[in-house]
Length: 258
Image (cartoon, rainbow, N blue to C red; front, side, top):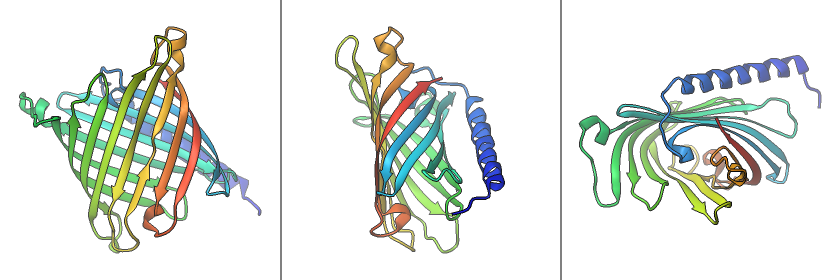
């Protein structure tokens, strides 16, 4: 196999530049004051896993950010990843702006375990791979009361992939971020999400989950919430809606809060 290293270098540089610009744009939003990773601030993650589909290794750099201003909040992330060839890394972005009805109206919107309802939208974009990809979502998010300082959320969307050949469908996304203190020094954190996406016309339904389990390394030297070390399992059933094509990889993960 012969690579054009000039084209590879330009491709990597363009994607790093786009990743940096997205990261800086997210940081312009006021950060929410909270200790839960999904509820406030920014982080960078470095992930590495072996034997992706028994064919190669996977290295990923992820930037995540949550910001809030008044009744508005947003969550976004950018993944820069490549396989063992290192030939042309993929850049994948998701961004979800939301409007809290409780904060917008000045009165709590509560129903049973639901503590807030949000009007939400989002965009998913992939640069790289066999072809570029874009999808758009719009719907509602529900935040739930749970014990302790944690997050449990359910997002329900209308999902439309770019392209006239694709039908609109549904997406359900539960997400969570739960602290698990074991002892004074040992603090764990369990976080992750699941995406359930319906049939878009071509292909079939798909399911993606990425649960993460972390140890708060910073807490062992009295600086909690700064550096986490753990693992992530990524499982994708019917990858991109292709029936029978599954993906599973266990990755080491170093997370640094900014």
